[in-house]
Image 1 (cartoon, rainbow over the protein chains, first blue to last red):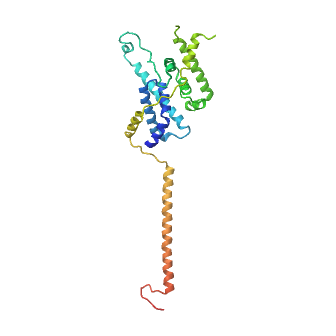
Image 2: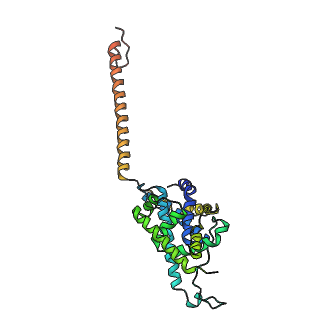
Length: 178
Length: 98
């Protein structure tokens, strides 16, 4: 693949890849780095692309795998962190919650609630997370999701149903009566 | 009747409504381009079939060229013989008047 061909592919698919990654890792700097890695991988593995799936499906798969690798790497780092670093230096409280993520594309009136939803998505099992992000944030159809995840359509439907159930369950735990 | 809690959950679940795609900064492409320049030169492996097809094409073209050249040469020789016979030319370059 030439760099001109990659440039064409990049500008055609960069938003989709970036938004998928952003929804997954919920951090803009990490998302930019991972998106770069996605397209480097596209460039390096172009010979392996046999055209059995569409180009967008292939790129989505690379993006999701890169996100999963990144999350595994982050979790490994956390496990080896010195215990004292888990506690806030000033308050002495256990720091275990990830920072709130405000997606740049969310409407202003929905920013707070969407941050809560992203937090809940972060806790979903991997496959439910994939299905939910691809459906609700990327707007893919069940057929497209099943191609990306290499699952059947009924399986995707089931994953989405369980994802929504689990999200509502998690939200219930966080609800504060005013 | 739905509780306040359920309404709140519904609102949170619907908070992605109208979400716009985030646009990566153009500098991301610049960084990627710079990384590509550092990529080791890719030696592209060509399939054996393509190599054999190319070799066969070259041999075929060479063959045609040789055949055409050979045909041209034999045509030239034939023409020379015809001329020699027709004008009873002495190939020793002596002009003979019939």
